[in-house]
Image (cartoon, rainbow, N blue to C red):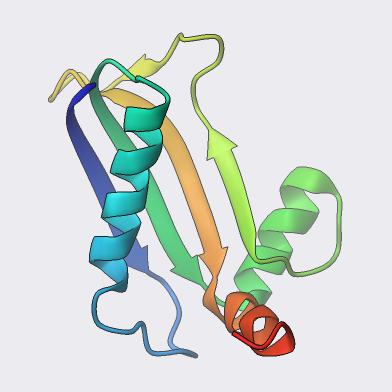
Length: 112
């Protein structure tokens, strides 16, 4: 079980208002995934909310796909080996980037 998880959430977009409770939901989801994976030790995860233009740039830069998408993930560890935050001793797991615009459009498309 995870000792302590720090989820760093940043809102880098102004297009869609982030509903109350979403930040807590994101933290709970991260904790639940690590618990299911039986992750040991302290961890840090970065979650950024961006607009379609920024996620499209990231998608093109890192995946050579010139299109927006709902989520991109950038893991920092591989095969159980992680960079360590020297200030906290936590394992740095990586970054999750979410296009709120794209997620909202998908939700509407699927009737959610």
